[in-house]
Length: 75
Image (cartoon, rainbow, N blue to C red):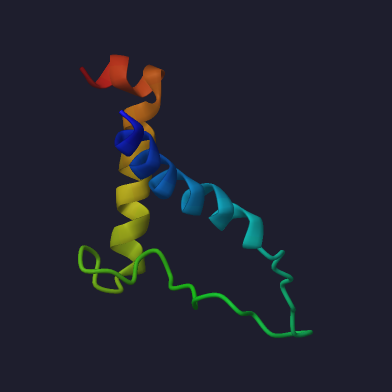
């Protein structure tokens, strides 16, 4: 029983002590510089292959599918 307690304490103690060494992080922003990943246009993907008109048609079709008035008339 004592051996199990010693092993348990040997495992738990480093985990508890590990949280004590955390240092706060400070984000430094460069003025006028975007630090994140570059954004792409929504139609620049494999499905639309850069075709903005096809993307706009797909968005309009999706919106019409969510419009209850259009769904009732179409069906």
